[in-house]
Image 1 (cartoon, rainbow, N blue to C red):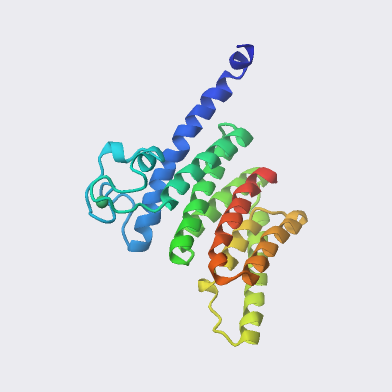
Image 2 (cartoon, rainbow, N blue to C red; image 1 turned 45 degrees about the vertical axis):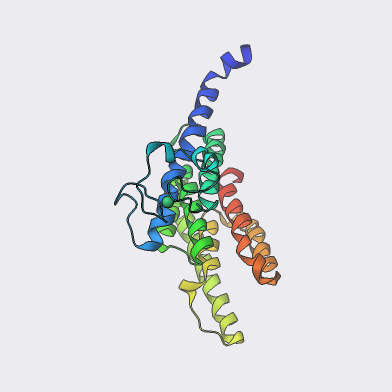
Length: 245
Ligand SMILES: [Zn+2]
C-alpha cells in the first residue's frame, strides 16, 4: 500500500495514458482511412467503409469494439482490417512510453504528437505504398519544436535533416543513374524516413543511423513479399529515438 501511496501520481497518469493513447489512435485511424481517399478527418461522423452506416458510440471503443465483433462490421459483417486496431494499440504504447520518459511536460506533448504522426505515416505507407507529405511535415515540425526548445537554436535539427536530405538525394541520383531507372525522390519513401530520423540526431549521434540503414539493406535483399514488413522495425526505431537520445 505504501508503494501505491508514493506512486499515486504515476499510477493515475498511467491509467490516463492507457485510455488517452488508444482514443487518440482511434482518430488516427480515421486519418489513415480518409486522407488517401481525399476526405478530411472531421468531415463526417465515423462510418463503415463497406456499408456506409454511421457508427454508434459502442462501435467506437478503441481495440474493444474490434475484438467484440471479431474484426467485422456489426451491420454488414464486412471485414475491418486489423491494422486499425494495431494503430490504436501502438498509440497506447507510445503514450505510456513517452509519459514514463517525460512525465506530463512539453516534451511529452511534442513526442506524443510526433509518435501519432509517425504511426499515421507508417500505416498509410503500409496500405498505399507512399509517404504522405503533409503528415511527414507535421512529424518533422514536432521534432523541430522539441529540439529548438532544448537547444535554443534551429541549426541542430535543420542542419541534420538538410545534410541527410542532400546525402540521400545524391545516393538516389547515383543509384538510379547506375540502374537506369527514373530519378523520383518524392516516390522514394526511405529518403523521407531517413530525413525524419536524422532530424533527431546531433552530429555525434549520426552513427545511430546505421540501424535504419542496415534495416533498409536487409529488406532490399529480402524476397518481395517480406519487403513491406520493413515498416514494423523502421517505425519502432523512429519511435524509440526520442527515448534513447
Ligand atoms: Zn458495414
